[in-house]
Length: 381
Image (cartoon, rainbow, N blue to C red; front, side):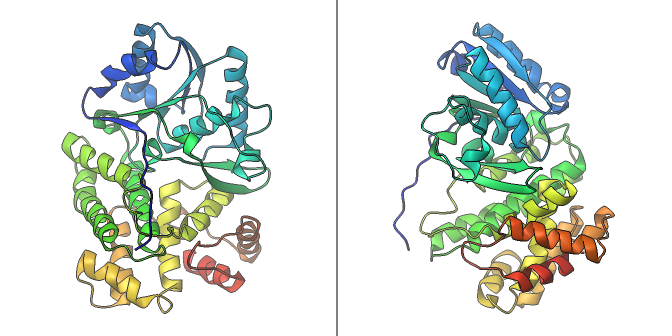
């Protein structure tokens, strides 16, 4: 078991009606807010209007930046940061899912500087300060509401990469499961796959950490038990709450103590699918994970079988992979690109390969080479 420091400064407000606490939280941070949101769902579920009400009650001036994409792009970060810089905002309020929160995080470190956020993403520059972020979560999936990470896409460079820095932790995150009651079935399922994928990245990481393993397995079990029930009853508040908390726990740090690192190779693969096809993040992961597991069936059989034994009492490595694939199918997540009506020819496969090369797709633990890329692409078709 490795030495570790467990640190998470996010104040999480969870449950029905918790957004009523926004007024106090925001008034303690400043007087001018940049409100960041997506393309309509926040208005439909009421979170946008409740956020406006809370900020106005605190006497806070509001500036808006909307239209954040499901796969967030650096242009929106830079454009919003320019507004924040010009208006001298002293807080950012993100209303939406992980894409909106990730965008807000990168805006927070870009406002104090004059260069593009992409220079942070690629490690050319390091942020020294950040504007405080408040997150109002409307989609259970990425866990961004309680961690220090953000993922941003650069369409011009055909790159989608993650970035982590302790400055990116939100100050407050408000999680009211009622705001997820209007999330459609497909997006709910993709969020379930996303949460499971985060746990698997920890499970296939480096380092022996038995208690972290048990926590990881418990989160996956919680999601696998309640996910299908929720998909049959999308208006069930209690099931929405269970999935929302599980998705947060899947990437807030509690699956990692005692490990050297997670792997994150599958996320690298999924990001390339998003760059090429603009696939929803969770859907890219359900496709990529099955291909990755098949690649590693003979490389790390014991670890894969341990997973299957803990989750399903699986009889073998192949049985483990089959049952994970079956679960994704049951909840309506794709495990092949063809299920999304994507049928790459040889030229398109070569382009996807080149994107994987350009993004230097690799695991931190389980390394990938060119032949692995080709195998994975074939398995994803």
